[in-house]
Length: 278
Image 1 (cartoon, rainbow, N blue to C red):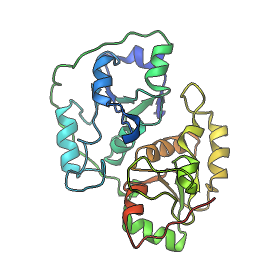
Image 2 (image 1 turned 90 degrees about the vertical axis):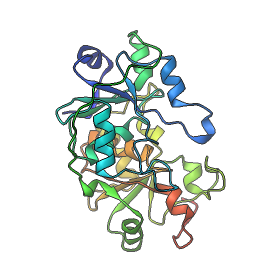
Image 3 (image 1 turned 45 degrees about the vertical axis):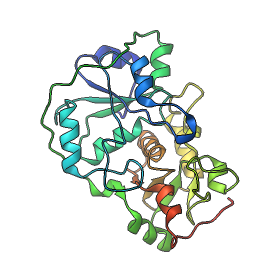
Image 4 (image 1 turned 180 degrees about the horizontal axis):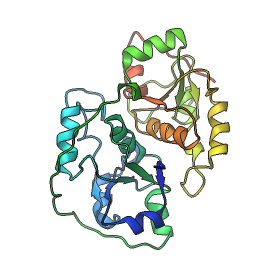
């Protein structure tokens, strides 16, 4: 199954797929995903709150939950193991991949992302709904955790020390190089030693859709994806890193892992090395 679905394909599949709006706004964007969803969403969609489908016992934002919590929550949202799940976001294709990646992390491969997100749906002149949907009919979901798709702080310390994987950071160049502030107050900027930088906005065209596979391959290669080492995607808090993981699949590259804590965790740890510049 392709990781992407077009607006026309999704419209034709409505009623047979579980659709989620997985929009997450950064603290400095002054928007609320739930409120925006209630104003306008794809017919039949539900809101997938990545701060709720998350580990509640950590101060880090929207960290991956346990398999038990994930299964319980998505089952309550009507997702079964045979469900076809489609994620979209309100801004394009940068935030919805977090949902796509989490489902694949727990072994659910029948999942796609709407290429171009809600803007592509609107551009196609397709209908929208407003309000809060009725509760879903609960389903049973059994997870199959794929540990190789997730990296934690211990993994990242080893990778930075021995160079055993190529880290690619999805943040804007100013944040990566240390010339622009982080959106989270008090968080230092910069990056992990050895990381490459591929801002998530650069894998999208002006319409918010992912670029063609051959173009993506060139961008990933320029960021350090030479095929010799495994890939690990990072960002501010694990959201746009998931979009880089999606882009790698579209580009035909080997499956990438995501560093869940990303720069928020790395920057807050006193013992981790940080560098600035290119």
